[in-house]
Amino acid sequence: MKNSLLDVQRGFFRNARLRLVLLAVVLGAAWYFGAVSILSGDERRLWEKVRDAQEYLFRWREDRGISPEGGTDMERTGFIGVEWSPLTTTLGPLEAKRTAADPLWAVYALRRFRALGITKGDRVTILSSSSFPGLVFSILAAAEHLGAEVLWIHSLGASTWGANNPSLPWPVMASVLRQGGFLSRKANWYTLGGRGEMGLDLPEEGRKILEDAAAREGVPFLKASSLAGMIDSKTALVAAFAPRLAVSVGGGAASFAGNDSEFLRGGLFSPPPEETVPSGDGVLQRLLAEGIPVLHFLNMKEMASEAGIPYDGARAPRFASLRSGAVSAAGMAFFFLFLLFHRRWDRWRQ
Image (cartoon, rainbow, N blue to C red):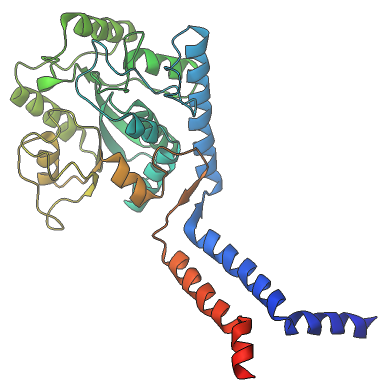
């Protein structure tokens, strides 16, 4: 029996085709796991919390007849708005809004927080826009998961497909998430958003919807008479809070006033001496000048590619990156080993 088993094993390893199959399986596994980042236990719990919140919000909308328009929210996130309404400030692609609602952003934010040394009790400022409601919730969920202390200033106007449904502006959305047990806090301050962050480009109807929704939620508005005044007010609040990190979501008018080009890429901006402060005089430039790093979310397509999050793809609890060095190495190894074992070389030797 033992000799028979050894004969089978020897026969297997003498068979070039079977060796090639085994090689393909091994390299395929290395290829897959080299290109995929599996979530840890607590990261998976965070991902599931965000996904459960999305299902809850989506069902809440269904029950009240305000579901997202057909085909716009295939993943049932509940965070997709309408193309145009009195709450709309600017244009924004639907694909970017769906990408911003991927629960993986919560895990991505958690990893960035930890990489930057943010721990329980550390202070984090969140400056957010209703243009990316799914992303705002994910970052809040990550901060709560970590136990960070948060100062949160949020603008209510939204670009197309954001939190711009008149029946579901951000204050209503946030209230629903709190009622479901998925969000523990309210914003500290609201602004109307839009031009000057004072809603100057919103119709009176839109401003009234947002003001009434904020009043019902009990969140005060940050008032200013000009964009410069809004920048001053926001900066003063953040400076008094003294956070270790500022997180910016979207393109609020006060955030990076005077400089669209450098901040459009999104990502982490480090204060001097590691980087120079981008030109302009917005809140983010002032915070960088004060030595506060800024994690800025805006360019969803580029940021998703770098993070390993599918752009407008299906939801899954894992990151994937086609830029992984392991993927390239496995592919090259498979190619050359395939040539090595190819039968054509046997004929050449004969």
